[in-house]
Amino acid sequence: MSVPSRPIVGFLADRYFGPINLYILHTLILGGLVFAWIGVHDRAGMYVFAFFFGLANGAAQGLYSAALASLTTDPRKMGTRFGMVCTIMAFATLAGPPIAGAIIDATDGRYLYAQMWAGLLLILAACVIGCSRVAVTGWKFWVKI
Amino acid sequence: MTSPSMVADSDIEKGGHLSHPDDVSTSGPEDAAHQTDSEQLEKLDSEPPNGGLLAWSQVLGGILLNMLAWGYPTSFGVYQLYYRDTLKLPESQISWIGSLQVFLACAMCTFSGRLADAGYIKSTIIAGSFLIVFGTFMTSLAKEYWQFFLAQGICIGLGLGIIFMPPVSVINSYFTTKRSFVLSVAATGTGFGAVVFSATVQYLIPKVGFPWAVRCAAFVALSIATLAVLILRPRLQPRKSGPLFEWEAFKEAPYAFYTLGAFLFFLALYFGFFYVSVPRCFFVDSNDCSH
Image (cartoon, rainbow over all chains, first blue to last red; front, side):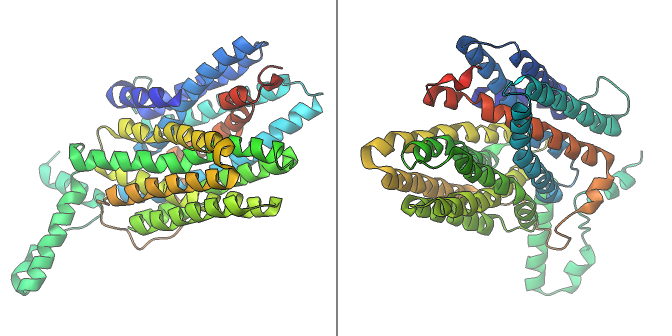
């Protein structure tokens, strides 16, 4: 699902909303979706959930590099600056699944608390990236960034 | 705003190459030719084309390298099934191969990003592609767990991390106005790569056996990498000096917040990846998908 959603969201980011704004929005949507996942109990529901999760996830990951590019004024530092974010992110990809697994094991194999953990983290991530936006634009709502 | 100050500001922004017209008059013909060369480069530095065949072909190069860098690791699900069902390796051990591959692919980005900024675009991609293709061939020969771990987890993982940064850096230098769009178009390569590499291995294992199926994936990777190396053309003057880590970047509040936000985002996201992934639901006919 990520193939069609990425260019569309990228186009909207350039033309109307700005990549950072859309990245924050999609992180919030993903957080909301993880909470919605708590209510999914059958296979059909899971396919519907996976469809929307893939859509939002593809959009967010496509915006992830564009958002950083808009925070980097000197294009000749793009590789280094983006690379450092990726290296730090590498530890998150390594630590995330075992933490979730440990939460699932500690709560007798139920997904509920792991889902709440992931959902809250995503909403927190949106808030922190929101801080990044405020640090650039100040407290203005309608700014394309 | 008076125009001279604006001109000076923009010159400094573009890397601080202030031209010295005096040099041309005093130097010989060879130096003069050199001077016009570097002036042309400066001109290129200052005006991203934002379109045209060359710029869009760079986006194609980006799609190809994204197919490798992020699409290829997605096919690990197919390998995982083979290791579990045919080789009877324990699942917790198998998943370490995939985790390490993704970890190294991300962790190497600081080094490959700095190399890309220093202008080593093609050599970086060639080195990374060599590791990927070599690691894939070694995977096809592997029999024991530690051999898969070395070849697929470490060797391929390092290669994936090395090739990801150069195209991002190159594409970014060609566009200013359509930047989000082109970077996200390049990111669609991930989806194509996931389909191509998963399908290659999944459909060929029953037909030609695991070793040759994996070798076919290696040839696919080799042809994708070769095309990408032929297509990519670096545009900016390389930034050779400067440290590996730009620690000052963290003093910029937007960058520091962004990094923390991205960390939290991926901490939570891979939980979703591992437990929601649709391929898992299609390939494994079990109750993994609902709980």
